[in-house]
Image 1: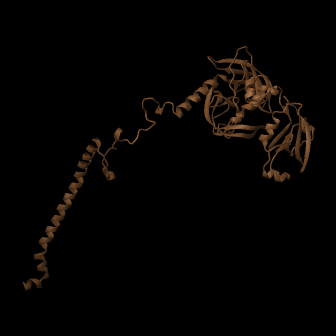
Image 2 (image 1 turned 45 degrees about the vertical axis):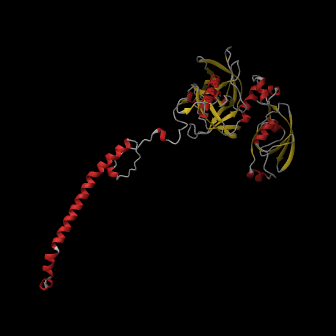
Image 3 (image 1 turned 90 degrees about the vertical axis):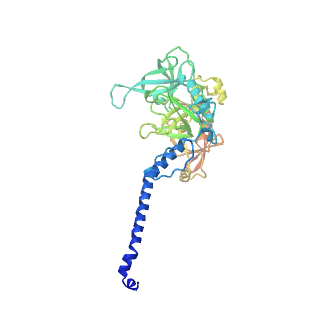
Length: 428
C-alpha cells in the first residue's frame, strides 16, 4: 500500500478514472433529456393553452418570440363592466343613440340647408378682357342671394364688374335661367343689387342679425365654387369685426370663418345653424390661389342698410334689428378712409392717448375734403361722443343720412380742431 502512494500516476489511474467516466455519462444523459424537453414539450404546452383559450379560460402567455402561436382571447359580453353608450342597439342610428346632441346637430344642419338652398343662385356673366385688348368675352362665375319676392338678387360687385351679359340660375323644382340687369352697385362697399327679367315670384332668404355673431358659432357656406352649383361646406366663425384691404377696397367689421370657400362662392350666403343668413361670402386669403382656411363674409346688417335704401327690405326685419324707415334713403357719406390707432401711431403723431381713428385717405370733392380735413388727421369725437376704435366710428357714422350735419373733434398738426361737416349722398 505504501508503494502505491509513492506512485501518484498509478494511484490516479486506478482510483479516479471510473468516477470521471461515470460523471461524464451522467452529464450526457442530463443534456440529452434537456434537449428532448425543449424540442417536444413547448408544442404540447401550446396546444394545451390554445384549448384553454378556446374554452374562455384566462391564460397568461409569455412565449419566446420564435415560438409564439396563440390567439387573443375574446371576453364574453357579460364580463364587460359597462355597456358602451355608442354601441349599436335598438333605437340607435349608425352607432349613435337617436336624439342625442350629435344627431340633433346633424338634423339642424339639414334643416338649415333645406331652408336656404332655394334662395341661393348661380351667376354667370360675360365681360370684355381689358388686359388683352381683345373683344373676346370672358366668362365669370359667382353666387347670389334672393332678397325679394320680385326677384331681386344681392351679390358682390366684383362678381359682375364690367359685365356685358348676366345670367342667373334659380333652383327649385327644376333649374331655370333668367337674364338679369343691375339695379344698383357700389364699388366702395362691393355690393350689387340685380333684378331678374321675369314676373315670377320667389321666396326670399331669411336674414338674421350679424350683431349677435360670436367666435365659435357653427356656420354653413353655400355657393358655386369653381362653378359647382349648390355646394355646401361647414365650419365655425373664426373671428368677428375683422378688417382687410383687397384691390384698394377696405372691408370693415368682416366675419372670419374657416368654412371652405373658393372662387365662385363670392356672393353666396354664410348661414347660422338656425338657417338665418348672417353674411355674404366676399373674400378669401389664398396665397396659393385656393382656400387656405381663412375666408371673410360681409355682415348681413350692412346688407340690410343697403337693401333698405331701395325699399325692398320687409319692415319687420328693420324693426327687429333696430332699423327704421329713416334708412329708406342712401346713407350719408363723409369721404374718408380710416385705420386704427395703435401705440406706435399715437407716439408718432403726438397723441396724448391711444384712441380715435387715423384718416388714411380723403376722397376728392367729399364733405371731408371741402372742410379741410386731410390725410394724417385723427378723428377723436363725433357729436361729442368719443371714438375709441373703428367699430365705434362705424356705429356712429353709419346711421347718418345725407344732408345731416356732424361736429367732429379732430387732432390735426398736434392741435385739437373742431369741424362742422354736412354729409352728402353716397356716390353711385
